[in-house]
Amino acid sequence: MRNSFQELAADGEMDRQYKRWFLRRLPSETSLDMPMSAQLETIIQTTAGGDTQ
View: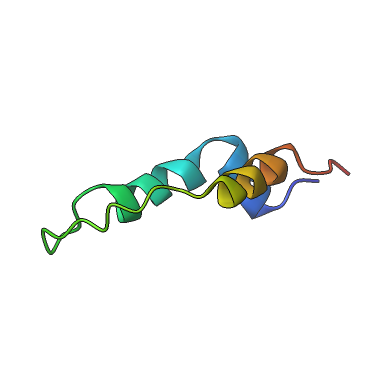
């Protein structure tokens, strides 16, 4: 059984939300312009492939 985080990682939603909040312009018109670290990218990829029970 997959959990919610695995599902969000597997369908790309975690990546989309990261881009929305950390790369694109925020509602306040500010952009954080903070690319995803290699470590976080690896964690998301690992989570997406997580255990299936």
